Length: 414
Ligand code: ZN
Image (spheres, rainbow, N blue to C red):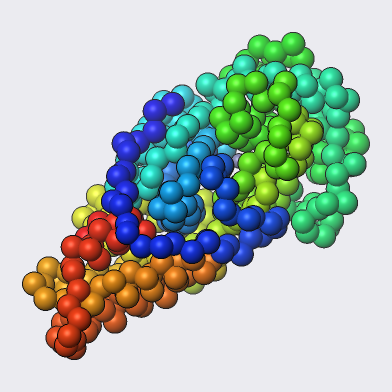
């Protein structure tokens, strides 16, 4: 699927130290010449709320930083364009699921483009990857890791559960909360996920040797990540690295079961552990409450843009918090970001400005320390204050140099 237009990263003549990330799990050397990153994409029925934006912005910073280190980045993202929530929403809105998905994917791509997120090299939808998924499910079945229940095919997870990232009881409740069916009678293990769902009346389906139907959620990401980051022959070829890919990312609500199950399935398919590192972003709440579909309080990027909010202000506002922390969105957050962006723009427009080279080094250093964006923005604010009050003597900076660096490193085109 076509992603959104390329975003150019202006070159940067500054040394970038290794990027240290506090991973949720795994270990990442982060120095390989080729960096392979997979980020879980949206289910296109409700795009793009600020939680999505904060997540994709985080991996965009990693992408930018790595490319600025002159390393090759392969970045792949999926679109879950067939899943229960999409079908439920289409029925509620009396529309067909395909039109709903198409409209939401377009909206999402427009939002990402406005926010200056670097597009993925491959932006792959599940419905377009069906043949690949069928081949992979066949391999999991042949390997003996499945059983059938009324035509539905489950992945047998019991041999892998000693690696659970959370206590078993918590895993059970999160599994139920996030699309799983732990209480279905006949399952061998409550946490077993669906690998393939038998077709139900009035639902879309695809042909497969093991029955007409559609894939479960987790296998799609394993397949899309492996196919587009390792190559078309990933099921046959031997992987000569310790891990299939470098980084797997998404919101913290994907840690379990989604990333756990996708990683196990990838290991079953390739014989190698999936990702060297896993990184997750915090959740975005609204006015002191959790932002969620059920509460109906999601803030959408497209609505903010429509109301005239500058996309760079949204980007700046999201950078005000560390990616890993849960944060609240309020009118004041947006208001403060508007003021800071105006202050920075006005300083960058001056003929004579405070020294810029040290500020750029400071921003790089903050980013290298687990993407410390609040620190980076604080340094910029001090620079803008110094420029405004003409608090500089001998060393005069270059506004153009700083402006380009903000674009390269933070994606802020001011
Ligand atoms: Zn995923």
